[in-house]
Amino acid sequence: MLGFLKVPKNIQPLGDKQEIDRRYRYWRKHILLTIWLGYALFYFTRKGFNAAAPEILATGVMTRTDMGLLATLFYITYGLSKFLSGIVSDGSNARYFMGLGLIATGVINILFGFSTSLWVFAFLWMLNAFFQAWGSPVCARLLTAWYSRTERGSWWALWNTAHNIGGALIPMMMGAVALHYGWRSGMIIAGIMAIIGGLFICWRLRDKPQSLGLPAVGEWRNDALDIAQQHEGIGLSQKAILYKYVLGNPYIWLLSLCYVLVYVVRAAINDWGNLYMSETLNVDLVTANSAVTMFELGGFIGALVAGWGSDKLFNGNRGPMNLIFAAGILLSVGSLWLMPFHTYVMQAACFFTVGFFVFGPQMLIGMAAAECSHKDAAGAATGFVGLFAYLGASLSGWPLAWVIDVWHWNGFFVVISIAAGTSALFLLPFLNAQAPRPLT
Image 1 (cartoon, rainbow, N blue to C red):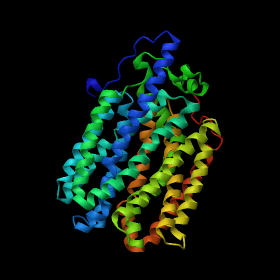
Image 2 (cartoon, rainbow, N blue to C red; image 1 turned 60 degrees about the horizontal axis):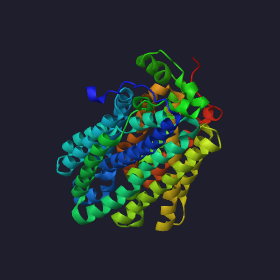
Image 3 (cartoon, one colour; image 1 turned 45 degrees about the horizontal axis):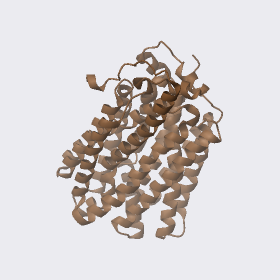
Image 4 (cartoon, helix red, strand yellow; image 1 turned 90 degrees about the horizontal axis):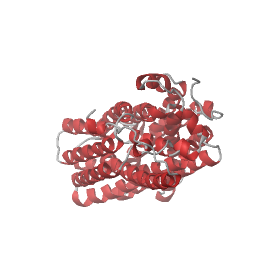
């Protein structure tokens, strides 16, 4: 990588405890705020296209199958890039890696808004997916570095709400802009916002505590679980850490399989939810998108509950909360499908409930991967499970569009119900796994 992307060498740690405490408190708040804002803007340049889907279909620029193809290409590219960028980000300077990625997605969204050819759309959307993946692994690495094991669930949950705030705002904003000024204007506006946000990240974000002369977070908070993870694999090269704690870790593979199924449900509701509402209830674009907003608002609360519960109720063990929420996904999806009252209020309430339960595992599985791995491989571990997550999400693109065309919305709900039920089975081994990583 370029020199300015490299992590700065550790400087001499500060000696005064009060000064260390002050700087830790200051930077923990500012880093969380910065990565929260940055990731919310990543979501704007990722989901604007989905939010404008009914308007794009109405203008005849694309067919439903074309849109499904773009979604599948995006998710496959994003998943592959997420793993690769996770590996690279573990040795890069977080502020520039994340900031430049966000700027690139902004430029691509602007170009997308000026394009007309399907193949140009496909190329740009795959390129967008490549740079989109520069956000999440960096955030996972910083959350692992700045917040210790027994408190991390709550802090990670706060960051994770960026998904939901971004996901809740973009359908309403994009729907309103698309109705009044056209969907292209919405893509351009999202791109400009991302460029400004990327410049802010390059200015404001910082890397690990050690790069500022601070001790490791586990030592600062005297967190035994975090210190134990920090001392694993001392002396191993980055390549050896990757093979032992990520690629050769059976718990990482199990989490990856579960992530495939959770993301089938999440992406299906996120990408097709507004179309389902507009076709079954005959509502306009803004009203249909408001149901997706309810999905994100439910996820906002669900992620906070899941993170807090895994810290306070299960002392940092993510397994029990993951299983509880996975069972909730199956029940809430079944309610959305089989509810006899097809009114907007009842359907929106079901979208809220599905979001509440989906975003628990969506957050906790990524966090569990970082905690099952090596401290210096958090980006690679979350990137690896993220690869599988978005392979699962890719199934909600063209394959699910085909299912809807052949078996209509009943086929859609059968597929995501099976995915929800099976995901719970893969989480059973984690019920009693306080620190499920291989012994050294």
